[in-house]
Image 1 (cartoon, one colour):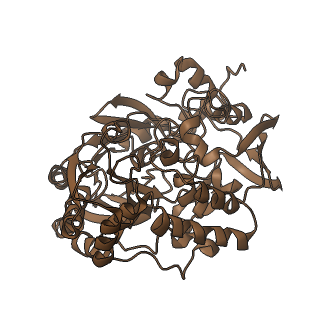
Image 2: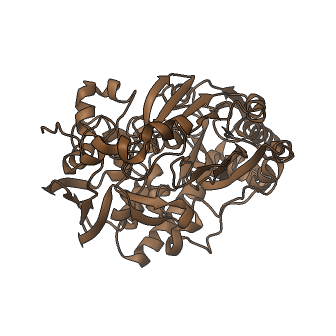
Length: 512
């Protein structure tokens, strides 16, 4: 592909929008975070912290408007239509410019989903991306601004797949110019309102406004995501004006910020459930009765009350009300029952052997406190848990030796159980692929859930909830995951329900 000319909009952007003046007057924002992603392409790192940053850089064909009840709206595609149950056709927006100055077109869509980035077991993004887009069969270019995507079987979620995480489009020329996947993931190039300009691993990521953006001028000249692990330091910097947003607040900090005229609190539960995972390879966790006992020993409501003061809730199992007709309202989720936990321990033949529990320094809101509370609850029923604070995800995910219990969260990537319970615990999910959990029965019901018959899908969801909670649990749910932010009163900004910090003109206004 040879595309050397920029669009007229790109060439005249400085004149039409007086870009230099706008850039001079806009503020530089700093967001104090607990952690940044180390690999910036979503297909290289599937994490909450990556989503928070990179959806400002890489865009999807369809835009999910979190401020309008998740309504699907035109993104990089002006329109779309179902050709049949397996085929979706996109009409791409014209005049879209990539951060490297090239014009975005159908070739970029095909490349983003193709063999060099995603499709096929040899593609670098396949391992992560397949749990979201693994049913994709091919991408057909109709002309420069029309593409059809074909799935292997009828898919009830085709539109949703291209409106959410992991369907971000990249720019082919920039990818190829990077020379390697490892170079590319350090500084991906897309079409969003901001572009990546500086990355210092473990310290900060800087995004700079892209003033040739098709969708409107970004309100900030730059946004720097600065790693500040300690909550006290994040709050102190927010109060002095060094930071304009601070992430991962806990409710006990709210009053301190709400009583300051220069700061406020925003956010709430996002479309995510905090869970813990049981590694079946651990000798004490092979028996499902041990895993059941760990789950029955947890007083989830006590955790919610003690740490979140009503700002989070205990879900009805691993499901969310955004699933609509697929939400099983009459499901009876597992409840706190220490007597049953002790009985299951006895039946499992447990004799007090040590079980490790790995966690991080508040990657999740209140993570350290939650780990300490859980360890005490388990101790009260006779389970000997050793707390192991780790420095990074690699020490949890990659070092399997001795691993027993570890922390995770289960986002509902789509408002459907295929985007949560099956995506994560099915055959393409991290847990089965990494052999912490195997269940042929779960997978069979998952195949039924993937169908288009609503009654059969509901039946499958009921069965999968029972397997997850009572029969052969791969882990257990705790509570809805809250995401609270301290925010400078100089900003008019509303957090969405996915963890993505939308800092575009759609969602951020600078006051004054």
